[in-house]
Image (cartoon, rainbow, N blue to C red; front, side):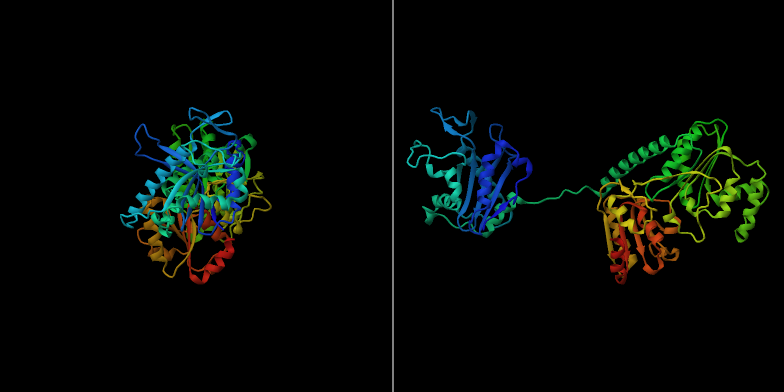
Length: 541
């Protein structure tokens, strides 16, 4: 059987009343028993960029049929009642139409010229096969008298009618026979020529959005979504002073926390504000963001940093030092200081709360008054520090749960779900659509990382937008010249492109994998040993 392209008509064509005639012929050809060497193409478009002003610049041929042995047919279809008046004006019903044979001839001449150009570009020689090619018209809604005279300009054998649909194979062969009458003058089309026509009508192409532009577009979309999420949260819980906000990685917790902090700063005079988290890198990022947004730095006093840095400064202000070798004793000193009632804040914002120890919460509780705004953000799925757990019962906050994942692409977010426990909360993946994910097995992590890094740089990605993550600080030394971090230090951070190195799967708990995967916004490559590949594949399903 012949092959037809496309194999099925789209709905917009099937629903178009002006295409009924074309649909009838399409179905007849699709269900025909034409020989397997036939290829049928429906609705072949063309454009002639070099056409002169008085020449046709583009067009469409309704059907093109190629056969390796017989040649090429170009067919124009006209539906409805067909007629031609004495002035050579053609009609479909009462509607004026172009002369179908002339119209089809123009299509044929263009495609034949394009065929010759393609033949030369493939360096197949200067002499083209003199295969049969001709144009025909098909009127699938009407019939004609067998012996009807159509005038000197028209040969009835170049037309197809309604009755021909029932024996379409015979009709198509009769069209080809028009050329076979002069068989001695025409060669077979041949496979090479048929392949050229096939490429002309079906050539696939894929213009990829560059990774650089994709990242740019994704970041704009994420920013908009996060703002919307903040507005919903703020609107729903306006007036609540004590709030415990939990949500998955990528739900916008840190950005919402910053927005809340800035809003409270701008609405107060002579207030004291505190923003604390666990990790130093994220605290620096948050501090820089807040500093850049605050214009009047004399309006209020505020502190942004890690809990330990806050404790160190508190002790320093009271003539003492933070002793990391005897940290619990230092915490006791801080507790004594804040318990005297002199160290109070109007606003306290806590991020990464799942990594705050019970001792820390005891201290924090003493920083608030009855009027203090106390908002807490965290995700128990990212609890990667030993002996850390949220202890917030002392503060007695109202609890909310964010269910929309915004930061990560849908593909990356999906890969993280096997390691996520939402306590019954169902997540909605609202992040950008992107498929920039790959699991790569390798026996040489350093070499593979270097190759991926070079590829990203070549695609226009800046080095600061790329990070290599591992579980082991010691293993980072082999990735020279590349931004690297352990998942422990990078928790709370994010990067457009993440290369996640799983040196040994046995080292990783589910929360480690969850943190590593969710640091990536658009691009994620996971590297693993060959022996871990199948295990990781099963985990990521």
